[in-house]
Image (cartoon, rainbow, N blue to C red):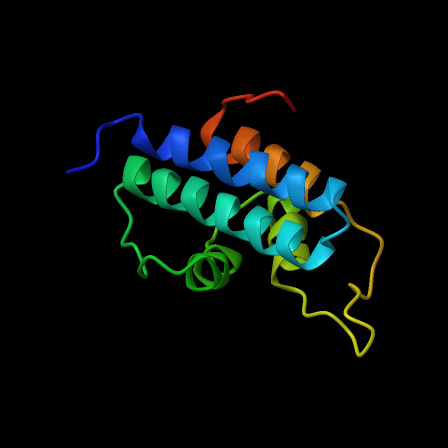
Length: 117
């Protein structure tokens, strides 16, 4: 059984790994970790709101959140960015910092700033 704060330690670990991957030049891994961090935050948000959880997949949680009524425009935009697929060159089709946006999504959904450690 997970503790009440286990989600936070898992989220922080994903963000730390994302930043390490980016620093090592592995943008693909950085994007995956940012998405997983967002998925953890969304899971906690859904639990706090008493909403159904579509499962453990970050992608499924992001898709579910994208259709959630009452989501702020900024949270909707971040969710859309996190759902974007890379192009033929393995780059996002937009200029977005998914790690920074994952931090921002945590703050928007959970009212909690993790600070970019």
